[in-house]
Amino acid sequence: MPSSTASSEDCTPEVSTAWMNWKDVFLQCVQPMLAVVLLLRFSSIVDEAGFPTTLMMVFFTFLITFVTGWSSCTVVSRKSSEVGFVKTMLAYSNTEFALSFSIVYLICLLTATSTFLTSAAEAVLHIFSTFSLELLDGATHDLLLSLITLGLCLVRNRNARYVRTFIFALTCIAIALHLSSVMFRYGEYKMHRVSDRNSMIPSPPSDEINTVFSQLFPAGMCGLTILNIGSKLQNSAPRGAFVAITVSAGFYGAATILDYMEFFARTSHSNSTQTTEYNEFLSYIYTTVPMAIVVTLACVLSAVTTLKYCSVILQSLSRSNQCRCFLWLAKGYSKRDIPIRCLFILSTIQILISAIGSYDILCIPFTVFYLFAYALFNFYVFLVKLSDPEIPSPPTLVSLSIAAVCFLASIYTNRHLALFIALIFGISYCSLLYILRRESNDDGEECAKSMYPTVLEQMHELQQEPDSRRHYHPQILLLSGSPAARPGLVDFAHSITRGKSLLICGYIIPQDPCSRSYLLQLKIDKQINDWLRAREVNAFGAAICCKKQATGANILLQTAGLGRLRPNILMVGFKTGWEKQSKETISEYFQMLSNAFDKQVGLIVFRNEITGFDVTSSIRKNGAPINDDEDLA
Image (cartoon, rainbow, N blue to C red):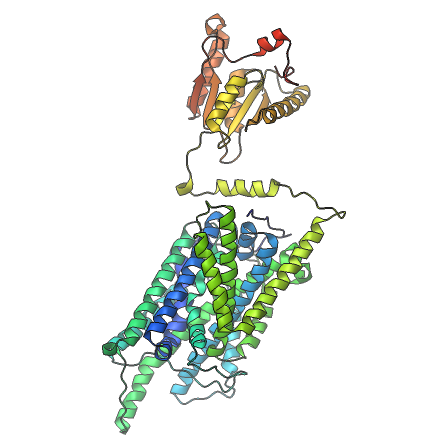
């Protein structure tokens, strides 16, 4: 399925990723996958669902994440020159799908931000409840954390990489303590559910399988993350994403086994003495409070990342021609083009979403929205794979199966939310399709779409293709003169390229450049291309004006072609009757051959016994010109 060009008046904000390597991509992907679920809820999930069910859910979650991440890596690798989620999707897919899918993913990220901040608020409540402290308003911490997150999004931190690495190190230490406490039974490095009395909606029953699955699925949210990152990352983004998925799957698999096995099981002993209660209180301070601090830091960091992604996507959507009604959101501030208006609006919406309920409530729309987004993305990759089987994306049956499973899982988790997000996608897709069709009809007639933008985009992609994917292609500059005068030479060169690689028929007009010779050059260019098209020869004509043949050949070697499509072979005919030629003519012919070696390109000299390839004299002698080619001859 051919990709569409981005139809936007302004480019998306520049996201500097020149400093990023696969380790930075790994940190951005793995941070929200580990801290939120593994430290906040995973022990309760294993206790409520049991070992076999939890293991199946972990396998299912990371299988979906792996396949979706594979497809995302394909998009980033093919469109590595694009910046940001919207431009990457516009380059990969048609405009209506790209923009409507970006709206769906924007909702997913906004819900994820609210879920992270609610998780951080729950961790803060753990700390307050440990010391028997109570806030005046049990929901105030949500607002405070939201304001802190907004402030961090507006502030430029030059040490963001080190902060992210430090928090990830704390997360790894907390996970190690959690798993070792399960293994050796020396403490409870885990957190329990807190009261949700200030929530608009009470928590759902924890024994239902769809509720338990929705609490686990946020661990697999990084399937589409690299589409936000990928600006000329090429192999860095796929490597970091796959390492993040593998590490997370390993942690969750190990935690599932350790939480279930009887000789690793946690045991709690109750003692009514005051000394024992005091020791338990100290143990709780030394175990749960540090865990809550780590979860708070990790959740706030994840919320900052997702909120930034949200604001950039909203700003990019506002700058597209199809969303002109939101143009007032497109304005950026400072040299970094910070979308401050988008940040304030999204933060307000996020605060309202956080007020709905606890993590157990918000993880349900989180799961449904992400499953629906994964289903849409994998289904579109399936359609693209059908149209172009050479794309290194997952096999068609795998993409189609994952898309179907994600769609059914979203309906099973909550059919009302699945219908809600499906309606949003359907309405936005139909509206954009209507707008695009109305724009394409200037006078009520369908305008033929030019291939120029697509071909130009593919030329840029070819230029930036990594060395690992480059293969040798014979790209020939044939000094044919008039191709109608030497059809045998042209046909032989075309039998080498066969339309699969570049063939340029060079014609050096023996005249000095002037206004008259330029007109002659344009005329000859047109005649050459018409002749090549009539003979069904997949080649390009290149005519230049130069008095000396050797100088003209050197100019063609240096200037013919574009980007990666440049000649690497010079092909000429053998100089028939060279012994009868003057020294100047032979010296000029020899100079053309030596220029090829100086330019470090291949050289082909083709000889046709005694007669040569020039059939001009035969055409003139027999008086039988071929169409309009007599002028060329």
